[in-house]
Image (cartoon, rainbow, N blue to C red; front, side, top):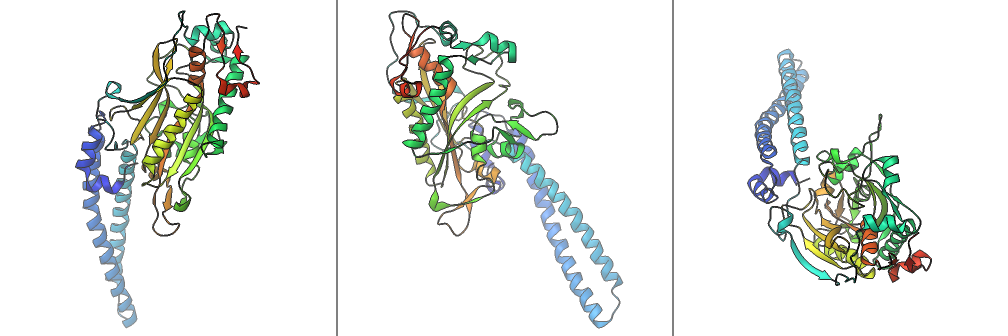
Length: 428
């Protein structure tokens, strides 16, 4: 959530910065202006009624002390009390409506984010590795996987419908190896604390990260009276790990890593990436998350992104880093880097990790603060998140980039200890 005071006192500046997101927020901003006007109108009358009631209360006390009648004064006091009650109720309604609107506003882009209207305006920052060359036509994973006997889409459709998959044999083993490899790397070399969070979270947790109220259609909600949703990403439970807490600033940054399955309805994306494992309703990720002080957070973003890149480099997967423009960054993000891995069977780079600094946006929603020196005034902490990495898309990249002419796939050397020493995946 944006700083309510900033929105109230510098609305024109906020409006101008939000306009760079290429999102029409005129309705919400106009409503906020109207509510601010109502708030300014209520507060003086409310404060005046409180002063008058206090003054009448003092007169009543004096009259009673002097043994004088106070009936008229009591009536005045009752009248002011009723005014105050009505004005407080009106103010509470205005504040609630204003908060609801603030929850629907996206974050302000950082000044370093390139301006642009959409994906076409994103800026490539760097590349690592060379796309592999083949003396045969490489296959996409949706053909290669079934031919190897490691991915089955048809049986998944029978049990769950479209956009699900079954991993079999070496495919399931490779999936597990990738998870264990990433967790070992991030905990052993990068200094993250591993977390096993709940895979179901409540509405408050999703509001804290910005998934609710705006993106409810993207979520899977439990039936019945449960206020629980399947996690769309481990970012949600980890972000709420310190919900409504005040952290000791001397311990920052706090770095967490978690593996979870993830569940998304992909509302609004029907017809996009329908083939293969690219865009599934159920997928898996190893998620990186950092709580940092404001003066640390952009260095922390570079570090977190670098940790995600290290996974790709150890797996010898060519990739590029892309800075998303103002029109393409996510709702909660102030700045985002996408890492895009080369997929040989599709001859293109595809996103495999999105690393973002949300600054204080999520922390305000979740009530997470810190005291810089362990004492003193508390302020909102900054939160950062990124995939380190998306398991399914990494599996795709391993299969497509390491395929051989005979239909087999070479297992990257870094994964072999997690594959029981297996070096080749051969057709079943």
